[in-house]
Length: 271
Image (cartoon, rainbow, N blue to C red; front, side):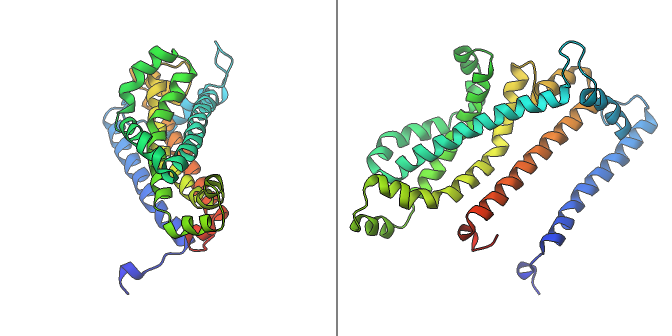
């Protein structure tokens, strides 16, 4: 049987997906052990024991100045910024995308503007955002929104514009207004695509969040990583990076599961 025709079950797929991760971990441990055998004070590739010891205080010992458990406070602050940015971007993509995709006059008027904003590197706007909004939460959330919303809007608008013209004509024949076309015809078909757009935007959203926190923040996952880098504290940086990757993977799986459960018709009836 050709490989292109082979189907992998979910259980076997999970097992096969874990193999590269396990190999990478084993490779890291081997290289780290060799480096520490040659130099016991090596900081570049810390051993698991050193990472556990460094993270213990952040996880379970309150900070002397703030009284907070820094790891969980960092996580909560970053997730709040991330979810707020994703929420605003999702609503913007849904509303503006429907208008651009369904109404040609709106697309002709604002389509070029959205495209122009989408091609601007968001990181280049970070100084402007800090000047305009200050160093508080608004600038950080705004960077996430500016970074991902234009791409989500273009994706949703393109999906709506590509809906079969026959559906629009039939709905109008039955007396549907523009508002009804948007709510009854376009909206149900665009929701699965919207969730997929959010899922694909998770990676860039994390990049913009970490960038903003690294420049101007006093708490957050990105802030902590860039704070301890000056001390070459890889025993903190690596667990933080791994935690960010785990959070991103969990959010991705939640979105995939939600999409398949809520809209099985969009995935060939598979749940």
